Length: 489
Image (tube, rainbow, N blue to C red; front, side, top):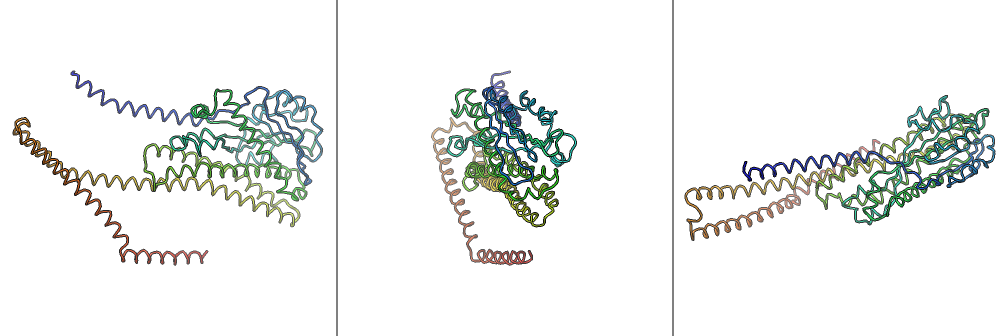
């Protein structure tokens, strides 16, 4: 086998090797993005514990019983908690690192909760898991997933906003899995303990992206920044939950059954989740979606492989946000429907219906915001594809014009080379080269004239009196149709 044949085989195998490598890298990248790594405290002495008392029958503000961020103080703080009053919910808001803590489990066991936190390991996010909180015999927690976003400056003003914008966004996402479980205290019918557990996790690409952008120096600093971001989001959710008492003021006193007390607290809890997720979607729309739309605007961009990858990544992200919005709005709708039928007083029921209407409007707004992300992305992709098809048709037309001129020229050159070699042409070779240059110049001028003629023809056809009158007639007809439709509605 000669050297030319070996070189040909090597060159032929290079595209196959490149395509196989890209397929493997893309597959491995997709698998990595599906795995979320838990965010735990950087130090063994860090934790998150908030203890509140919520009144079940009176419209009193929640009492903050204990706030603990140091694990070494957990046992003394739990031991010094005051006795739970009657007709109250004692709420323990904890992070995932305390789910198996021996001091907390012993404290709950002493308060009449022998099962501890083990049922939280198998939660559910359907209606049966929600209804189990007030009517089920088995202890099953209800789960909700929300997202938070940090380090927005990297997206808005960083150098990766156009090249790796989707990567930066994934690196800034924090996934918070919230689980709630309501358990009755043994031997007491007017006391309940509520466990709210947050399992925070981050995308594995966060560490590599932070090191690439020189935002952190070392793994310990990265873990500390992650934990600080998680505690900040937990504090924000705590404020939403405590503030929910003001929204539903004057409603709890009308409830009578223990089941309705639990349903009412679940509604407050899910309304806090709704508020937290609404703020997240608003921040995503202002600080990410608007920046990305400037890159994918079909008026200024073309559909390239890099842009297609970014659109694909955004499509999956937006679909996830829409699914989460559907999951967190369903419990609110179910609880408002159930509680709307248990109020004995018509006036109190009327007041609750006003709150329920506000929650439904907020749920509709969240669904509309989440669905708008995908719809605008589909619109951009549609027009990018149309623009690509137009450019491809123009390139095919140019190639056909070039082929119609250079193909006869190449045939003539081949016939000439069969009769005599170029070296035998002597001075005639210069005449032949001059003829080629002359033909090429004429072809270029003709091509530019034809291209200009096509553009002017399109503009002329658009602004002729006939086309203008036709568009006006269609516009008037459309206005009539829309007016009729509006009158029917």
